[in-house]
Length: 479
Image (cartoon, rainbow, N blue to C red; front, side, top):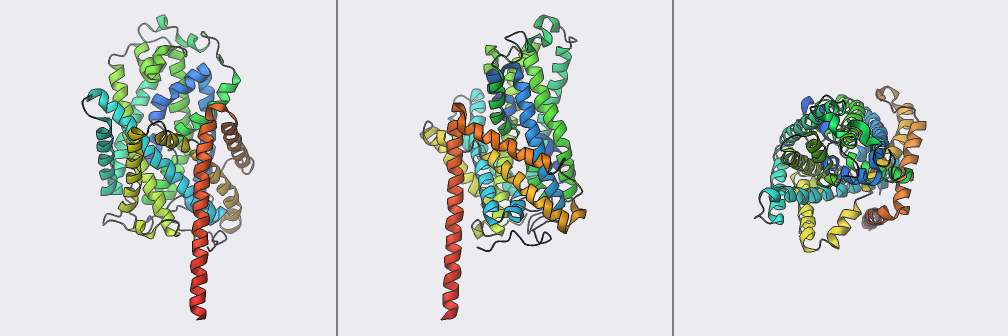
């Protein structure tokens, strides 16, 4: 296999403003803005945050702040590269430039695997929500229907994807904004009956701010990081927008506010309104908070919002998986047949690949929930961290080359380079090591590591095949 890691930075597959080969620049500024804002607001925030709160108490705010800080740094690093070199596949292209073919192959297929799993898991989660309203319909039927709907959306055109994600994100942002306003009014005592609920006393009244100690606060960073995954979709989608560099720059700059406000701010309000040890949290942290405030129909409203978040994740998952595979095909790291585009510039075969494997995973959710599906759930637990680690390593190396070969392209720079870059890498290594050591996350680490090993073995097999083909070609010429 030819190593292209040292090729010129000006020959990197950058898309400029025209998108990739065959891809359409159909995403507008409003699409990119809402994709960037809504990308981090997923079902994990509304449902999964319960686990972090119950494990750490009010100090869950610290866990989310630390995890968010890590994601902010990674996004800034990614933003630096994306603004300097907008490219199809985003971080896949940068890994190839900085780390060589093995780096790009690994990060591309790991990211693809992550989103294929998200597609399956969100389809199951969405079916659970819908079945509460339609109890007579089997779960697998609802899951299949949800996947078919979102597959059709992605198959039509990138503009259709953008429109759906725009409205999904608009609803999520509006809902979380209303929650922040109502929650703040309640906490400061301006809501009718607010004083009877104790206000911010819940932060210390039930065993203190750190009822479980410092340890759980640090270990909860691991699941919290997973909730933030999706922030990088804006960089991936930039290749299909009219002004990729400008759009990525805006998304990167705004991620700080989004993380601090939507996650840290809303989690603070939840633990201030509802005692962290309350059984009400089992029904969902945000439902519990709205019920405590006295909002009628809070359960139904949050179920609808969670369903929208699930559909948004499904939509984004199919998009992300198909685009990263499309980028892999450009370097021969995925079957060439997946490069075929529809007349509207959509890689439909790549979308169907993600969909088919999503269907397989959904089938296992019902056929073998405790073995095969359980492994699938665990096998992608640390994958996002491995991807982010490779992004950080790519930035560290690529920055040196950009400064040497094309310094004027560095219009958006990583803060405190190289010290914060090294700090980010070190922090992620510590988190991954913690996953390997801690009993609660050891299974996730082992299964995720096996996923990485399979990807690396696939790369080794591909490399041997190419060498054999090259040798056969030389032999034929010599004859």
